[in-house]
Image (cartoon, rainbow over all chains, first blue to last red):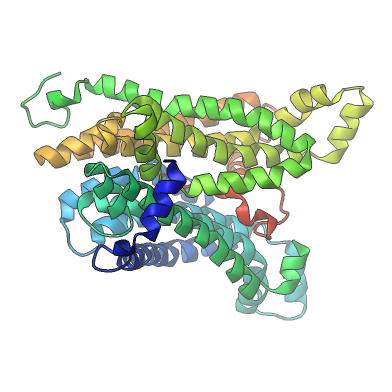
Length: 223
Length: 255
């Protein structure tokens, strides 16, 4: 039996496809945690990164915050939050996942705004555009590909890290890994791991499509 | 090593290590992967620069490997390498490789063509050109990758505690949960974060020593560091279909 056998056995067993511990429900939980964390992280990091990139201020502070965020161990933070706030909803998982997603979004959105070619910005000003129009109609569209790449790496990491939620008795696809490990059931572990990896790869696909849709064709070509 | 106390540094005896011992285990498990990862990715990056067709498939493979959650990776490996340090070291080596390969390739590729032409005019062969010109020029980009790889390695080791006390300082987390000793969790998280930041600072210092030609001054250094950390590439194609698989900018702590 190799790894792929275990994975296919797990995925083809029909009992894994329904009920509370079924794949659809666990997938739904996993996606729920991931999207919520990403949305919160984007809401925090995007405005800060974009504004400081636009004004060129606070780059040092951002670099320090990003390094600190990277250095915090997600699992440790999860355990700590579990002690501090107990199991109040999803809060103990959200804090480590948001801390994980903020640095890439923050740094890339800052850098995206810094590296916008000044020539089109000057041209836009010369055409009589106001500061708001320059920001939203010129700088942001040009910076969008890099901003999305930061969101994408955050998404990949959040999806694969959300597995640790199961270690403090929350749900998601990580349940299969943790339960399988304690039950010495290799098939379940392999199946859960494969599902999470597939979901993380699906994020690459989602962001590829998103870029096709939201990035202006001109910006895409010039890249 | 005292046990029975309740302080931040009174470690339960089941850890079988003193605080300093845990730090040593933690550094071993996180830095060996960085070393091996660097040793593997340097020659492979050289090949990718020489044979361009090799790079996209390697990038795809590394993206797939990076998507495997570390906790699953650890548990998979228990069947082969047992609950040992090797089980923690292998996945972290893979992640290091995934971060470093694009950092090195992009860094080497972004060396200006004039520089290459000059080295050719000086009679360098391709081996000399790679090791004496391209690699030194790529040092800032390589160090940006190394910093990300080292810091995330240090924070990921803690997940090894889930597979039977193989997580260095992270083992304190398991005991914190088992004995309801909240202060052990604080010790663990703070120690790991401090360790990560200390090594990050060390790497910045080393980079400064290795690149005396780089512009000095706070602003310049910061700009260069951020530019490299984001995307060690040029300004080209941040996110085109080709870079859809580019994990170069994966700069986050752990998973």
